[in-house]
Image (cartoon, rainbow, N blue to C red; front, side, top):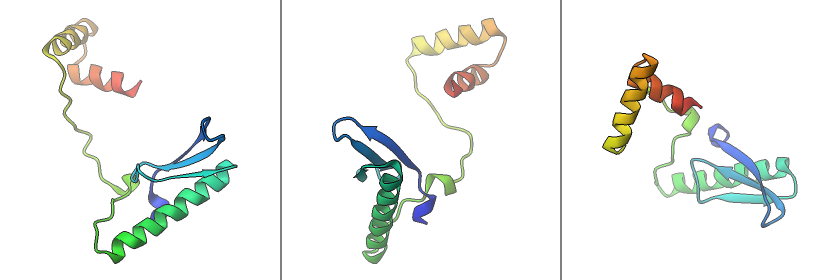
Length: 106
């Protein structure tokens, strides 16, 4: 299951190495001289943490890729923003939902 998690490799200017990260475990990271080694390192670390969590009876985060998404979520905005978006949607002759969806996808 550790290979289903969401990994990202980025450059750390501060450490002058590649940094491996896992979205589901934001407190974990792995530094390595190459992107491939950073990925291998963070995957192994996550695997060890998952094993430890299971051994201790702790809940293990589900991988983002394995979760089901409804396509709905609520966003709270100030009333002025809501009004401005409603006006913009009306001007563009689209629903507020379509306008917001398009803006979020940018």
